[in-house]
Image (cartoon, rainbow, N blue to C red):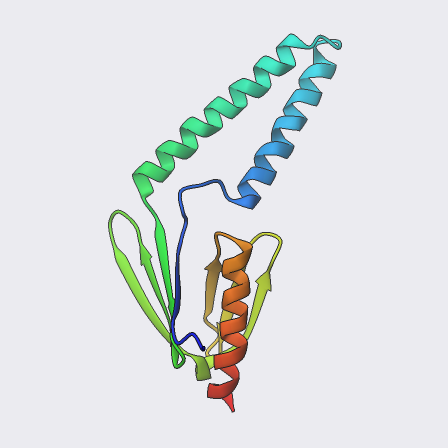
Length: 148
């Protein structure tokens, strides 16, 4: 059984891996520096770390509510469609597989890009490792057929 179409939506209303990594490292740095600054007392560093996390959550939630950005990806055997939506506008793009010159995928941070022969870069964002694996399998199968 072969899959003729593949699609996904990004983001799925949860924390991104890169975002979670950044928040964790930054919170740890805040904790360590405030621990050193307050001469090895434990309460102030914990309060500063919690304050940072609360401020980040507030700003992040507000930004996501105001911007409301979504990207829809739809793959067919002949082309790749992207629909970028935010609160104010919608932008649609259609890229034929024969125009794709190269691609790169990052399985750790769940992202990547497609580069066309004209030099235009189309960014890819995934919600899970299964999505990136399905995309890679679809790309290998259908991109080679069109390119050949």
